[in-house]
Figure (cartoon, rainbow, N blue to C red):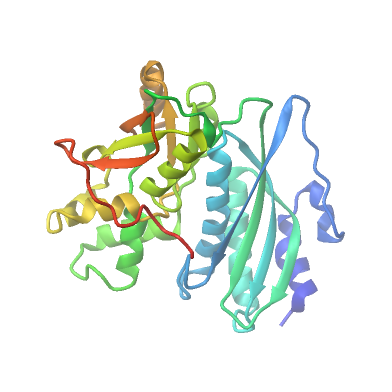
Length: 322
């Protein structure tokens, strides 16, 4: 075993950017360009809760980084740096850490950010990994949760519910599912796609935005609460993948679970009706589906309705830890 400082020197120091000072200091140096402000977010993932114990270490690393990049995107920010804390049991040896660091390195290059520093500790288990991501945005251009207005349309990127289905597949459900659909759904759970190109382009178009981690209904509820508004969402308008639709053919009740399942890491935003044409053009330019699924209204809470406009009862809007 390399030990704490050996692991840092071998696996993580090569990932450090200039502000990380070679990971040889107790702090990092961060500059912010004039006219821009820092955006900071932190997320933790726990073995057995957010990923499975036998998930490949490189994919665990990428998921950890990407869920934070999704938060930056939801503010319209571009990624710059990150800090990493690992709490690992002894059974995860140097090989696991090497593969974990390799996954971080791959995504650093893909998304254009670098490690500043962090900490590493031992734990009897399970593993806990925490990452703090820093980005920047033009001063005053950030998109908050709190700006939704009555009459705004509610939009969502990509498709919803795939990660929830992917976890079920990994746990043994849907054994008859075609291999291609299994691979697609499990990849959506293990390897989310943060919408880093979309978020900054919605500045000036979206009044409010968040990403979907707890579930579409729950996270729209957070946005509405922050904005002092309510919302109505048409379940039939929620975009589903081809794999999800094939499963829905034998389980018509499935769409409600998909709308509340969580781990999507798609962007959910409210924008005025007048921005609809520009949003549709942006979807075409980015090659990313953007679907209008509902409306912001006076009031509180989120109403999920069927095609006839009747409210659908939802036991829980999404994932909660406690």
